[in-house]
Image (tube, rainbow, N blue to C red; front, side, top):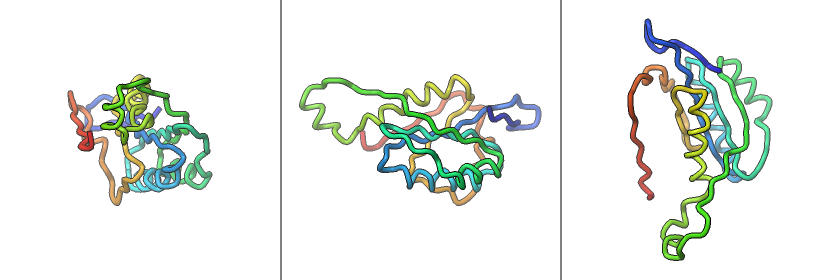
Amino acid sequence: MTWFDARPGAPPFRIAVAYICDANYHDITLYSLASIARSHASPLAFFFLQSGYRKEAPPALVRLVRSHGHSLETIAAPAFTLGPTPKAKAIQHQHITDTALSKVLAIEMLSRDHDYILYVDGDILAFGDLHCERHVGFAAIAGACLDL
């Protein structure tokens, strides 16, 4: 568990950073994870959820993550499928993969033990501290997937 105080007098918060990828995005996701771990000053709990494959994070990455006070866990992504759908809808939304849909289950799973979850796509790089600890305390969030 990763705990830290976000503001003076504030209760401790547990913040998870979640990645979900398939074997095609494995290497690029490692670069993204390393970029956030390297630049983020406050401790984070990284979760590298793998969909349809299993490959450990390189020992050098694990050492990097830990040397910056973070934790890293590599686990299987929860499976999510829509099942049979009408042909018209399947064609309209064929770019949405089961991996993308498993994000919902992964966030739900991580929210049991963490107060805040930052989902990051594997093609995102951080070039500076994201200051996640400064953004805790909000009552609601919104997100948009523009390709839907």
